[in-house]
Length: 564
Image (cartoon, rainbow, N blue to C red; front, side, top):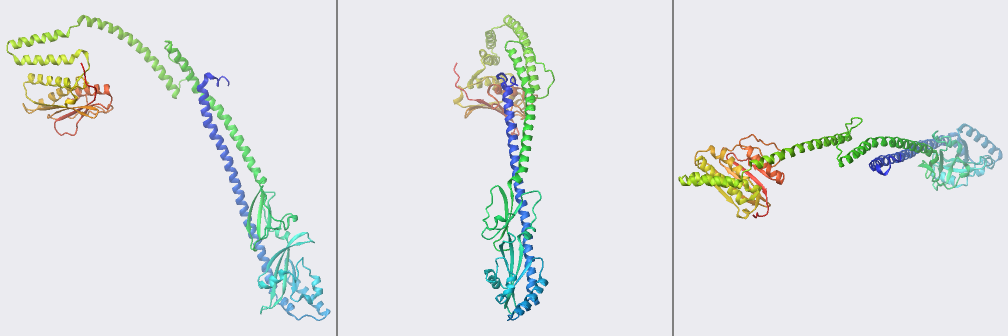
């Protein structure tokens, strides 16, 4: 492993590091995000479960209170009870005993699920009865009885501590009235806290799920632990909780569950996520090592092979196994380059040999150009001597044409000389063909001394004659040659009024050109020469909008004035 990450294996180290970062970081973030998402989802589900369970239990408690109230309403409506409480105050002990016996019968008749206590309005007249029905910490002189009389047909719920049960109890107090709203007494239904808590149903999946009931001052009135009674409820931070108001004013039902009961599942998710990420990273490291080695080892061997090229050892690189990927393409490209270099060396040797032979032949057959000029001058002198002025003029023009073409091997000339060369050619055509046509030349004086590429215009005017004005009757042909400056370019325009054969030639070198058309060969040669020298922005452009005649535009970059 150390050899893989050695200094010489920098490519492997860089690729492995980059690929590791690109994989490990997203995978780690994905694991963290997955854990956080799972945790949030679990907490959200827990919160929703608390809320749903709390809503169901609050509905159950409210229904329980309502049933007790309905049961009290039925008791209050008892005629026997009203008749008994509406009788005159007894004046003797025997009458009180009779009252107690009758009250016992009524209580037995009315008693339902819960303990029932009945207090006559004038209970002070029944001292023995009062001693029998002592209600926990609640008596006729309490404020609750007075509030019950004020509410008339609506009862009140209270909670008190029962010393005998050592638990809180709930009492429903309701006043009894005659039909003309005369108070007769009070009934009280006493319900132990344990009975109310039996109405609560907690999820079986949480062992420490807890319900707490608090009053309007946030004091505990019902709790699994009796020691918490009438203490201020302070929710612990390590608990999830939800609360919901009950039908009684100010009372609330609270459901709570320890976070540790939920975090057990979260810890399992965390552990599972860590193992998944760690296992994935180990597999990724192994696969990355194999993948990176499959690329870097061939490249490293190829670099070693290329080092041999620098010392002249041109040998192809042979792969043990053929590959179709980028590495295989790179190696095949290298082999093609080596084979091309070997072929080029062989071709160069052959060309050097042929070049030496050609130089010998050139030296043997070399003729001084001045011999041509002297010969043409002799022909001109003899033509003049026999008064063949037309032949003399043609020979003179031809000599000028030849001298310009050779130009001591130079490839550049001036706008002025290029125009003059084109005119020499036109003059020769005039003399040779015995046909007349008109030539118009318009040149911007500013560009006369500017340097341009040689032999651009002669092929254009040649095409204008051969494929343009030559197809018209004698004297009808017209050729216009224009040279002007346009910003940083020199523009040449050659026009004729011939048949106007279309040639699809443009500045775009990728566009196909009809080189086999009558006008295409000469124009294409000029166009390619300009593009080879100056790029694809320069060359020839055929005006295809004309319906008759032919117009070609030459675009040439502006250069410095030419000096001999």
